[in-house]
Amino acid sequence: MSSRNSLVRRTSGSRGAGEAVSPPPSGPEQAWWSLSPERARTLLLVAARPTICALAATVLLVLVVMLTTGTDLNNAPAAVAATWLAAHQIPLTVGRTTLGLLPLVPTAVLVWLAARECARAVPKRPTPVELGWLAGAVLAGPMLMTAVCLAVTGDAAGVTPLESPGPVSAFGWVLVLYLGAAAAGIASRAWGSLYALLPIEIPEWAVLGARAARRTVLRMLGCAALATVISFFTHLSRLDDAFRQAHNVTDVLGMVLVSLLYLPNVVIGAAGILCGATVLFGAGSVGLFGVTGGHMPVLPALIPVPEGPASVWWSVLLLVPLGVGVLAGIELGRTSDDRPGAPWATLTCAALSTLTFLVLAILGSGQLGAVGWVGVDLLMLVVLMITWLAFGGFVGMVFAHRFLAPTESPADYDEYETDEYAEDDDYDDDDDYDDTDEYDDDPVEYHDPAVEVDGELVEDIDDDLEVSIAAPGSEAEPADDIVDVEVVESDLPDQDKTPGR
Image 1 (cartoon, rainbow, N blue to C red):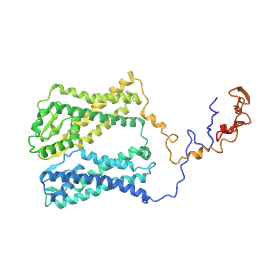
Image 2 (cartoon, rainbow, N blue to C red; image 1 turned 90 degrees about the horizontal axis):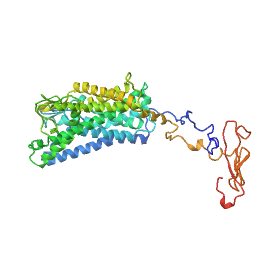
Image 3 (cartoon, helix red, strand yellow; image 1 turned 60 degrees about the vertical axis):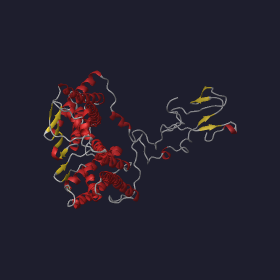
Image 4 (cartoon, rainbow, N blue to C red; image 1 turned 30 degrees about the vertical axis):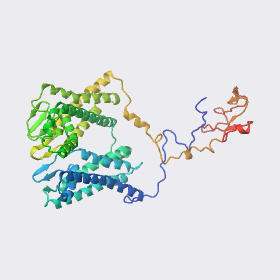
């Protein structure tokens, strides 16, 4: 039987492929500053919950450290304020010592908490005004807490050697971090709404390049972490020297905790070294082509840093970023329209990956007291990383075009995520598919003796079954090419009848 002989039919009022769905009727427009009680409660939680959790963890950590080290608790408010500022990468000055090289683990945790809370509060179909309220709520709590911490450090400046940082630097760091958290949280739930707000259309090669850049950054960080672990076990003999300044168990635990907090900084530096850039330690530097002596802090986290003259085989490690670039190029060669004359997705991947590592290197570097500036040489990092990733990506893309079969682009799957298949809360099945009135016009009768198609006897199925279906073009067929179905049973025992048939 053809597809026309179906029990479920498409009527003129149902939603078909390619037909526009009229939006649900909207009520009177409210002013942008008006919020429902439920929405106001949600925004209040977004503003308060991550900040309260972070503040509680900060107070607990400071109290534990001060109690175990026997420090006077009168300085607890200033210590809590300084810890909060340091967790947001705000440089601190204690006496004449400036601490700008701050651990990235607390910062990452705080940004992740804010982004997670923001993602939970994103409406299903957000408007620009709702997104603006949500971004403001993400910023409100941390900005208010930062203002309080600046006031506390300012009041404690006469009692403790801690100097209050400048408000521009403090609020600038908090603004950048939490705007990034808000953007990440909103994009994870409402990327379509953000895409609709853009003034220009993003080409497909840019989307594919951005997706490949995310995977490239993760692969590069994974290789750097693996190299750090291998170097740590290679130089494990330095462990005794690292703990030589520890006098008791508390000092050992403190050094281990500080090393774990600074571990992402070390991995970012290792990624720079793998690309051929140098990591500066004040007057000293470490790279694949040379090591210059300098004063370094004594921490277990710095055990993987190589010493002595550079070996010839270290240059082999340049194959790591090259290989990561080749892998990205192979993926893009199979999923994008890149070709040797127009490798736009490949170049986008290399540029965005380099930009991401530049931001990470800036976050993971800074002034470290008497040691000086500690971090990756930013100019060398940008030049070398984009060179290796772009060249490797081009080679991988050409290889994929010549020797590998193309695969379906991940962006192609987005074409199926239309309103026809997506969940629609305003879409009511009962409005389009009425089970009571739409199937009662032209009957399909089930009689006992035979099956009849188009008014003619076709075959015997059972002694008690007969099916009649109107022929195409006959008088029984509706003018709008609709097949109407009705099931009628007769001459059956009462106990065998099924309701609705």
